[in-house]
Structure formats: C-alpha cells, structure tokens
Image (cartoon, rainbow, N blue to C red; front, side):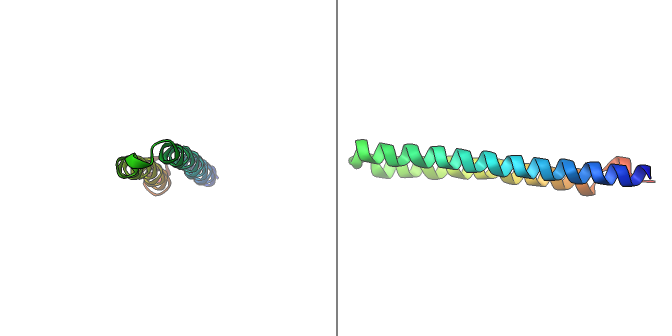
Length: 84
C-alpha cells in the first residue's frame, strides 16, 4: 500500500512538473515572439539581429522545458524511495 501511494505521488508530481514547464515555455515563447514582431515593426532594418536574438531566446526557453521534463522523468523512474 505504501508503494502505491509513492507511485501515485511520483506520477502526480511528474505530471504537474511537465505541465507547468509546458505552460511556462508557451508563455515565454509567446512573449519573445510578440516582442520580435514589435521590434520588426519599429525598426525593419534590424530584422536580422532581432531574428538571431529571438532564435537564441526561444531555444533557451524550450531547453528549460526539456530539462524540466527530464527531471520529472528522473523523479518518476529513478525514485530511491520506491526501491524495496
């Protein structure tokens, strides 16, 4: 019974972690892209520099979501409290 509770808690924790990471990445990507479009409308000649910075920023934001997913999977499958 204790093992089932630990598995359920690990599943819930992994789900919450991945869900919040996806929401955060979506919000972050949206904000970066909105500022990119705003920057292009204000200064069209700076399009290349803005595009490079936008790609770097979006890549870093997505890396955070991927790292959170990896941490959630480690919590789920490499949980030391589940060993007997």
